[in-house]
Amino acid sequence: MKTKRINISSGAIWEDRVGYSRAVRIGDIIEVSGTTAVDGEEVIGKGDIYQQAKFIFGKIEKALKNSGASMSDVIRTRMYVTDISRWEEAGKAHAEYFSEIRPATSMVEVSRLIDADLLIEIEVTAVVK
Image 1 (tube, helix red, strand yellow):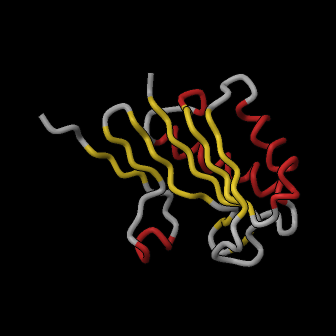
Image 2: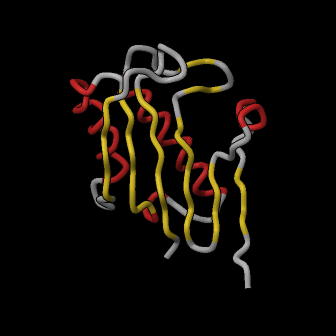
């Protein structure tokens, strides 16, 4: 029997343009796409990687809830930052959500993201218990 696929949309205009979902759930596994600090077409927290990360984790939390999961189901996070020297600021936001959950994680410096004002992009994997 084939496991049902559920695509979760955030309503962002880019989802249709690019052909992706905010999150996809198949069985107990949920993958949340790379998420940035954009609300509509406005970048949130310009110049502040901590505020961007906090905003992103809020968006991710909403996507997980819409797929029947929560942040406590996250087993893996991946953070792509444009300036690795600011790792502590991004890490602080991560710890505020995950200090008790403690998922596996990566933080990687990238040369740039899709908008120069974006400092971090985050994706997560969750497994519903």
